[in-house]
Length: 91
Image 1 (cartoon, rainbow, N blue to C red):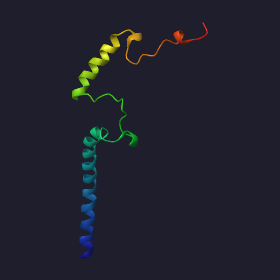
Image 2 (cartoon, rainbow, N blue to C red; image 1 turned 180 degrees about the horizontal axis):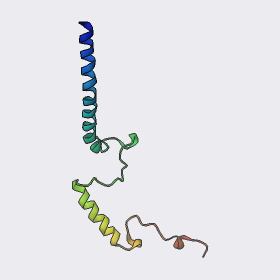
Image 3 (cartoon, rainbow, N blue to C red; image 1 turned 90 degrees about the vertical axis):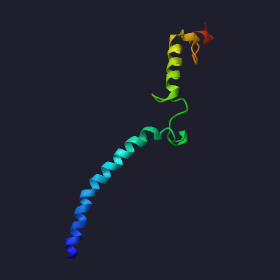
Image 4 (tube, rainbow, N blue to C red; image 1 turned 90 degrees about the horizontal axis):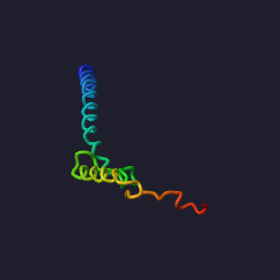
């Protein structure tokens, strides 16, 4: 009788293990999409200058600002680097 119960428990465990592993992967798929937003930068999270995620409220405003910046001449853009020829002391 003991061997019958033991084989039943082992059989159930063998059947339930793949189900348990699959359920964990489905849960993690949803969690990992947003978990990076809450991890600090020093622990490997998103950098401070990372763009907002598509679908968020800030994303459309960020895209409009980016498009407006793209249409400006290079010398007038935010964060534009100066022309190296202007800084060259040996002319």
